[in-house]
Length: 372
Length: 262
Image (tube, rainbow over all chains, first blue to last red; front, side, top):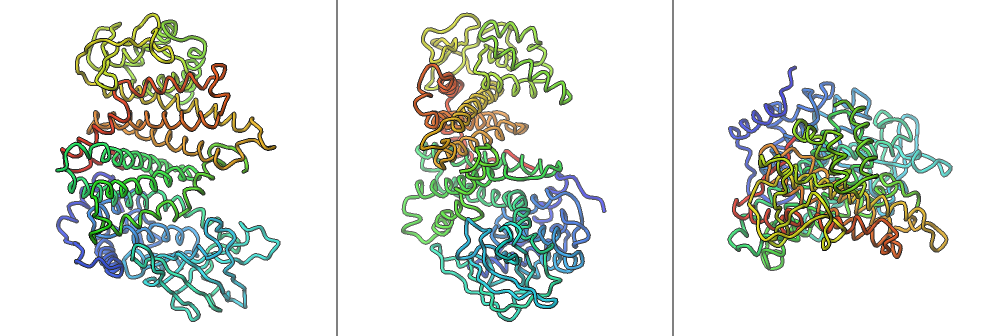
């Protein structure tokens, strides 16, 4: 299989997208977004586009991960799919490929890539947010099965998902937190699982509570070995913060274009605010580009991606603050996309590791300031 | 240039800059082959030399050379450079200024000619980022050394977060400076200078605060870097002005250029 250069790849993809109309239907509901994403994935998979950048042993066509970032940028940048459902794929497929038994990954990953399934990530719990390692959902071995009890929260898209990558506690009280956690790949139709979407302030019920009540999972569904769960969670960050960030950035640029278009007739009074938002987005994009080039050159990404995360959250909030400033009343009085997005952007400094946790990591690991 | 030679060059430049400044440093840089470096390998020489000027707190009139290289001017000249607020300055090659903050030999002149300043903005951006790194290094060391309430102040989250925020600004600015400006060199350089100026001002604010009283004294080095950052932010357009100018460009164009691509 010959893999095209990134530039050839992009121009061929763009030509294909021009010829194959995947414009979403006029349905702004969350289930509409999820359906549209599945439709886009199916088409991209059949044409091969969404298989590049994934290993051949997991249903892909090989080539560098950067090809995925390009597909994400073009698809999300054109608003063919929303970044939310798409981001789960970028985070969870690599985790499966790295940690699942080879035959399980070969069976399952293509289902995700082709849009047949949606997966979710069961990490946070009511008592374990920033302090994720304190999680208490328990898995106990019984024969060749594990019995799971507990509760997850903030599980995005669980109500649409077929499977969940779930973190559980398997170690006893004497095991350190970071060695007591084990991950499983769980079918969400297993008896004993209840999914309940949370109502949120922006009226998009993406986040769910997921309850596990004596849920039996085969030992063959363990990801890695007992105690590998914390490492799995940490290893997932570089994916979240490279290819996945790149498509979010493409999305923010497309929204910024829309904002510029709406305010360009207001004259020079908007220049400073537009410039500030642009500088924040441009800085983020340059940083993310550098991060992905480092990844492509074989560097291992680590705490340095906390900088990308702080820049992303800051740029996102700056963009929507600018929208509120330059479109007075649009968020408060008119029911537009800006309202939902402005409200959602308030969470950017909370999800995926709060801004404070990121700064703690930067202080400890990058600036070497010692313990608090 | 291989990594080893580059390391040697950097070490040599740093040592020179730590021992001399001003006209003397200009002479030393000339001996080290600055003119050839600038014409043969500007993409390596400019970031290196200007970042080191910032990190060491030294100064030389090499920004003139970058401008002359761009406009094809005669070596040794001092072309008037735009300064914030519509002013103009020249960077004297000899002597010091009586009036410019922090001792850079800048002198106001009534007028100048419009010219391409992209490369010079990028160079100044590297200098600003170097100054910001110098401030961060001083504040970091102070936070580890200074004990209050029975522990180093680096143990306090409020202090740690200011330093983390400074590093975020610096790393972000470096990413904008490192972006090759192939398609839109002027806009790329303008944004990079804006990001660098902003990062240096952020560093100045946070590091000054972390250093507390000692950072306000002349015996501590911080003030040199703070003053350098203030002066260089204004040179060739301040962060605030360049940001506004970039915004005006967006309004005229009707969309936001994606300058960085994979």
